[in-house]
Length: 358
Image (cartoon, rainbow, N blue to C red; front, side, top):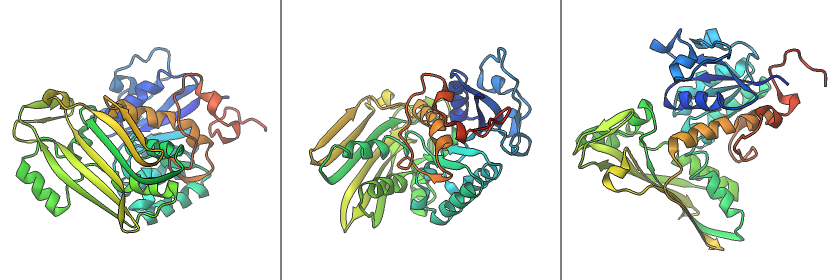
């Protein structure tokens, strides 16, 4: 079998990290890279800071230059947080008969907030015989899939609390802007009141995923958002906050089932939390039979976690039946320590030279 062929669309912090991870793996090749501006025309190895060695050269190009029909097995799309903003990109790749894994938070469970776009993506994928999924560390694992897995040892569940206290420092400029990093508090509050401050994107997706997975119906979702104001200057690779300004967002989400809050999400996140003595961590607390209290501290790092979740989902989405998928419709991803080709169903491989006869 030929190596798994991958295109990376977006070479920011997360996309570059995925490229570096892929270049360490067996049985997989990066065959295309897409970005904008100064990165166009450069070698992907130069952009991500990895020696090319004897690998085939890959030049960063436009979508039209890079994506040709069936030229890759999967496209990692690492550009947006919202389904609507990423839709045209996903459509372009799917219509070229290429599977898609995206890190867009809303795409983890797109029917939660964009049901019509979710139906359209499902239709496009099925018509072209390929699949698409959104995943990452959160949503995609810590505050939803991990919770769902832990309910597997429960006879019944009364309520769920998922808490993630994490650092935003590994993430790129898009996330910094969405979280209001470096903003004045008054400006932050005005945007919250106007409904234009994104904060964490994913509560609706995670709550609906959990509820649907265990047989609840989430009839209402509410959330709150407050600025985390720093009293010291903080600087991360892609954002900074002066003392007195916004260094992060404390958000809570609530899933109402039959008029009661059954699912609660608690998610304070900020840049450089260790500067002010904040201990990061991930917590799954389930009231049921039995009770579950799972603690992982410090947190699973958001940057490397998102990178790994997207890369490790490649075999599952290649092997999946055509259509739109979520983390509860495919096998759970796992670390790929051997040859990626060993995890691929030959009948699902897109790129063959030559095409085998089954």
